[in-house]
Image (tube, rainbow, N blue to C red):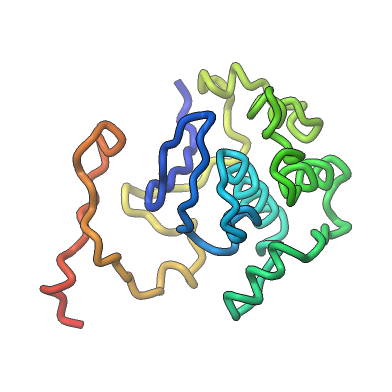
Length: 192
């Protein structure tokens, strides 16, 4: 089996039934779907919005909606029309427009086909999903890594930042956290 990259973020996650809606508002504002910011209740369609924001950021280097003021940022996400850079392909434009559709029922992935709608999008046509899921595809880029704690592939702006920990304790119970070894330091014992 070939090694593959997997992205996870369990910092703020909530499980809900397929037919349920959540009213929680937590996370990074730049990635929040309009329905979350408007407290309309949301479901997995909001996750597809966040995937669209992440994809936009990976393709352009910054999120589509930014502002130093949180309230103005929220207004932009809710009201501002999506602007797509001309250097992106037609397929990328189409995918981003589908994922970043402000009306959740019209958002790519929100239909009965769910994530398969996204997998079938023209932008992904070259991907053999069965082979990818079986980890049989050779990665096009393999970074040079000189050990478990190698940070050579990260920009210095991230590796020179001071580490800030959440005051919340790190959860260790439950099947979702099996194999995770990080334990947050006790903020009361910190020398800050």
